Length: 336
Ligand code: NAD
Image (cartoon, rainbow, N blue to C red):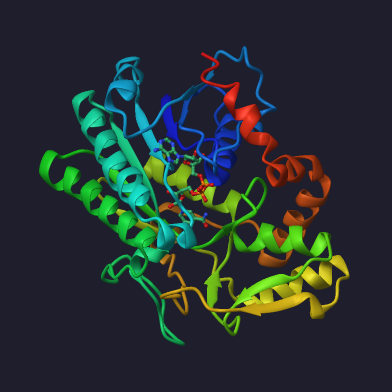
């Protein structure tokens, strides 16, 4: 199978590239990534440049002319991760969220349709459902009610993906996963940011009262869910993905401080994020029963493994913190 993975130099995308290379050594992978600030080519440094089953091309999914030859080279399935993904950035600068997440997804759908791609997997987020009260879970039939420019742009993209199934009969799937954590996550997101700050004995900024709840999933469990959806997802279906690991931000931060032996006095409450969703929680029964998905990483094990990864990969953190990775990115337009 020839896979096009978009956004494969980002956090989840790079984990997925490593996961798929291990799980399916015979597949060929074309990794297409624009290498924005969130893309980091060193996430893929362990892959031999001369590996015939793997090719990296630096391209922008909004650029139809650049994407066309990649589709012409033959693609069986697209797994679409590429996106602007940080809510705070979407509040400050929403434009690029619309162009990349909406227009970019549409460009891919058009090219996939024109070139007979047999499967299109849209990697989406539980944030498209909006916010929950103290109880209840998001199911696949929860109405879309996004609250941030980020989640609105993802919801818009999801609707386009759905429309290409309804209108043109494209074999699409949409996955909607809860918050991921694990190796290679850019330290603007909660868990790597807090680990980085705590390791340096710097304040840990916590929005508002810190009681916003997220449903955390170890990134490898998200990868295994996408693998199942890619191979066995029924045409046009949406699958929620989540591990029922609801934690307040304060609980997450406290776990990190305790694991690192750092004092709670490092926690610093800062003014709340605009429109901050209070609670996300996922009902993942459909993917469990229909596709047999089972997460393998309990939260306690996943968070411990993640903390250890950031300690063991201090050089990676250093390159990100200093911006040195951007210079390394510049040297990579393609390896194919
Ligand atoms: P990320 O920000 O770490 O990575 C995004 C990648 O997309 C980067 O490598 C970036 O260079 C690339 N990219 C951005 N704009 C591009 C463009 N115009 N053309 C080509 N490449 C471009 O994001 P992530 O956390 O790995 O998330 C990946 C996907 O999963 C996103 O679609 C996101 O909405 C979704 N998702 C993320 C989470 C999470 O917790 N991180 C949860 C559920 C769903």
